[in-house]
Length: 284
Image (cartoon, rainbow, N blue to C red; front, side):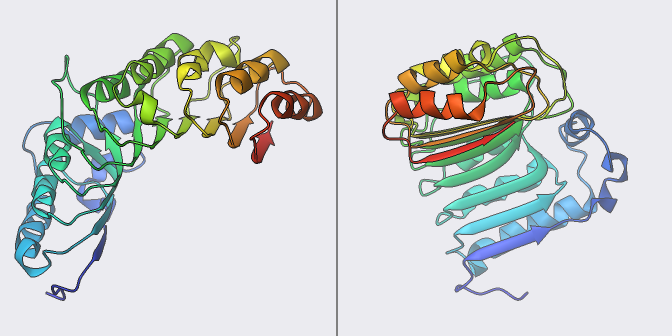
């Protein structure tokens, strides 16, 4: 094995051929297959053995990046790397067992996960005492449960993406955003990003969606990427955001809405109310 105590970063790219039934499938199908009991493949078991072996060979590992489908059980040994600072898990679905395991890593600062929708209510998951940045993909209802269950005291940046295989409405998205407003970490957030992937045509206005986030007074960076959603945006919406986020320095708005105010009026409204704004990206 080409590893030693000096190893700090581990990247693993997994071929999808081990789970051929998941190729070109929507996320919901992948979630059902990967979370269906202990149906691990030989590759899953080998990766789990690799992690277990590396705990003694590379005990100072700081960054693990995994891309590809992997059974959640095979991720549990990651909790045994005490020096981990960054965990990036792409494609594979993380469930509550993995989440609890990762929450025990006292030095974990940056985490990227695809969270699986658990059945019923999920218990609290304390820990994540050093977590500063969370990037998460999932269904709105699942993410709402996630945000309700965790309480990272230092969380500064939250990037959420609503996956594109579930048809949801503004009320569904709002349930998720409401859970952020009531979460224990809400007042520590300085940066928040919302990306909606599903293509659907709503008649709602932007404020109808993001109203729960307007109470987060400490944010200085906001990103709204709603490319195919159809939300209408008025100058009043921009003014509502500007007055709600007095510390705002960076604003990204990207969408193809039903109606949108001219860029000049949006820019004037924002600058007039948020003199601290330094970066503005506007695409419609």
